[in-house]
Length: 77
Length: 357
Image (cartoon, rainbow over all chains, first blue to last red):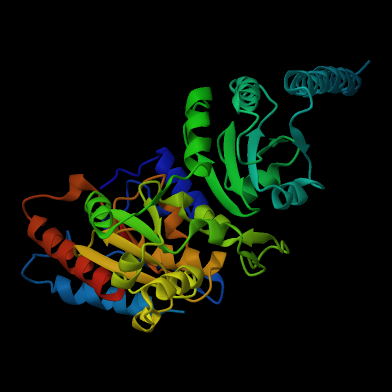
């Protein structure tokens, strides 16, 4: 795990993917899942921010949510 | 004289002072570059940028900013000049040295994602870019970097035992099925190496492999014409036709019937789910080798670093980056975070999606 707040790695990452700084700032809710893939030569970004903190661990089917994110990301265009 | 005249007077002199001072500074630094480098470096402008990149087999391109914000820019030119002088005359690769003043071409810096100065790029065959990542450009580490990227040590495997020994000590090993001398004379016109470039460069298979493995510093490079080993590894007969024919004649057997695969090289890796061997088939081109290595030569799950960021932008491998904040993991949610880790790791391996934390 890396702390991304304002360091060189974050700067490089933002540069490569032309991301807005909002993706990485400290007031974001973590974890942030960022899916990146190319479709017809264009970089597509697929972002997901599940709200784990607000819920009790027994109330959320985390496995199902993560699997849905991966499946939606892989089929997104 | 009213206030308007005063302001106009002041503005005129400020502009004049700025022009004289700043232009002189820029000119003096330009002269300094020329004097320091004795015209060994190509001074890049918009019209020669693309041709310099495309015409150079290897290019060290220094991005500098000619203003007071970049105190290390002048020093970096001197260091680059020392590196130029330190490269031995019989060095087996030609390297061009170039300088680009970003003050004059800010859009170029943006195009290459450069946000701090000085920045040094090492560009191979017109498109394969490696950022020299030390924040302070340093002569000895730069020479080491050049050697690491250009001088590849290929080991000839002599026997099955030799092969096993080297493989057991390598997390990642590339084995070329055949004679290294042959691939070095096997030229192709690799016009599909970069769809964004008009660069139709003639490269050998050896150039392509060396170019593409540059991103994988820990890879052990091997080759062999040992018949038993090639047979055991199910290697292609195409690369080793001559050697097989000789061997068949010597042994008076038609042994080549036993070797029917089309693989030109094999990648042995020991990560993700343990030991695995992956065969490269088809023709060796930059695009195909790059895709193959992007898919198999890095672990599926990685910690994100400056060095491996470049792997993420390969078009053939979908990527997920998970941004985490350790501070937000507490006794209430750690079980959920653990379940999240487990599930996303399983999913990444299942679909071969590269996962970065």
